[in-house]
Amino acid sequence: MDGRRRQRRAGDSIGSGGAPVVAVAGAAKTYPNRTRALSPVTFDVAAGEFVALLGPSGCGKTTLLRMAAGLTAPSEGALRWWGRARPPFDDPQRKLAMVFQSPTLMPWARVEANARLPLDLARIPRPQGDAAVRDALGVVGLADVAHRYPRELSGGMQMRVSIARALAVAPALLLMDEPFAALDEFTRHKLDDDLAALWRGRGLTVLFVTHSIQEAVYLATRVVVMAARPGHVVADIAIETPQPRTAAFRGSAEFAALCARISALTSGASLP
Amino acid sequence: MTRERLLRIAAPLLVAAVLLGAWQAIVAAYDVPSYLVPSPSRIARAMLEDRALLAASLGVTAGIALAALALAVAAGVAIALLFAQSRLIEASLLPYAIVLQVTPIVAIAPLIIIWVHDTRLALVLCATVVAIFPIISNTSLGLRSVDPGLADLFRMSRASRWQTLVRLRVPSALPYFFAGLRVASGLALIGAVVAEFVAGTGGQGAGLAYQILLAGIQLNVPRLFAALVLITLAGIVLYLVVSAIATRALAHWHESEVPRD
Image 1: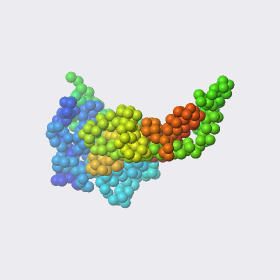
Image 2: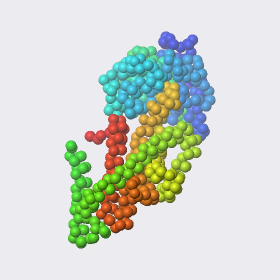
Image 3: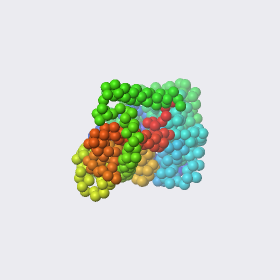
Image 4: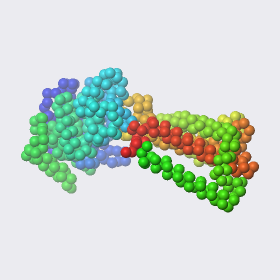
């Protein structure tokens, strides 16, 4: 076990006294039917980090992400957000936003209304909300389809709408649950690059669930490797490669070595 | 108009023409008396000759069916919304909605007619009882069939109950509601006709069912057929109107109404 390594970044501007954005302390999940989804897990996500939760299906990574989103309560242990015991759902300075596996758009609403949804629900005044949505749609390159309906867009574009909806609230913590898993490789690489640029440009903190070793190594500053039955953390590996990373990184020996190392960890974990 | 649409209209019309032609020919060839099987032309003549009488009756029956459908929608949606408020309410009341559904209207209609003094209102209530169940069951199913991801998003956004209802559950329920409405529109008409049969009310407010009853007794079979044709036509028109409303409401987003190309 690699122990806890924290990426030292200067970006903890909105942290209170340097408390981690999310601190997971011994959190475990047993469902009422006695299924053990997750053994106690401990790790922190510091401001400005891009942490990938990597593992096979059934390793509890989505459960962990849902805990970090405040959607599921741990059955043991606790989570803290910016040092507080409750997720800051209504703190405008510390918004959480989540991007799901599927675009999860309202089919009856136009793209702009979909992206504005969290702002509408928070009763943000319309002009202010519209400006934030225009900005977010511009960032993901969808300004010209704002008046379309989701079904008129490709899968990749729908995913972008879902990212724009998350960005519109100006989140301090962005939670992503295998957001590009259903897309083809070309689209996924493009969206990975877009996401990396957003993270750098906006000083976001990202917790990103994936089952792709390559995607985790390419994007993350830290990879939390998990294994299944029951879900637990195998290793916590810092990826020190400087930003911005480019397609050349994907072809480098360093990239291959990191992937091989993580791959060995995951296959080793599944042995009896 | 595309070839495809032309085919969809022309082909059934051709079938109708062939069948009616054969009917006419057989009746003429075997000299079947019109009190047994009237020819299509004889039915058409009956429709023309009795048009004042039949039109008035059509108005009565269609009025009852429409009022019942409106009442079924209002009450059915209200009940579905109530069910959506809590599992406890739904679990307590759903069995009674099912009891209402499975009890034959012919069996309850006499009671309703005894209890409710105003005959027209009694008939409307009978037809409502027949039509309401698909509205209740489809709408409450729709209100529960919410994309779980969107439900999570609403929770994370601290949406109020009201916001979740209006912005998520009601729109999610619309396709289900319209599917229920289509079924209910047919049932409202059937309910109206059955209730009229049971009530057997004639005179000023006589509906098409009463005309059928009377024509049967008098062996005026052409008129019986004419009334039957009008009931069928009324049902088709009602269905088409409801479908057009559903298409208008859902065409821009729901798979069931998206035009194919």
